[in-house]
Length: 120
Image (tube, rainbow, N blue to C red; front, side, top):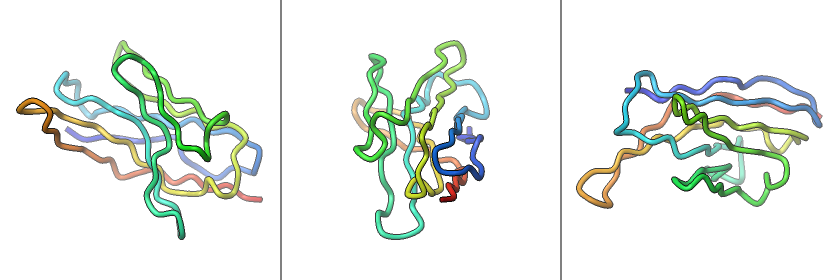
């Protein structure tokens, strides 16, 4: 099973993009938790947005109020709607899938990432 991201691209500051994340095959064993990003320099690997089992969401401080994470419960696809993009949002965005085993132990699956570039 692979995690597959899509929807990245080049956009001007103030613009919008929507990222999608899905599993390459349907399975109830792996749960897509949300999005992280790797910035070109400085801030490293950071949380963007994740969804909890109860439908609530967590956001990184830098994206609150601009980004929205959502899940299609029909097929498990997770989306990241990004509005009012800023040059500092430029990064490679990665989706995380998690598989729990033996209680609270888990294994993380990562996709290849999708590049988002915001021009000023």
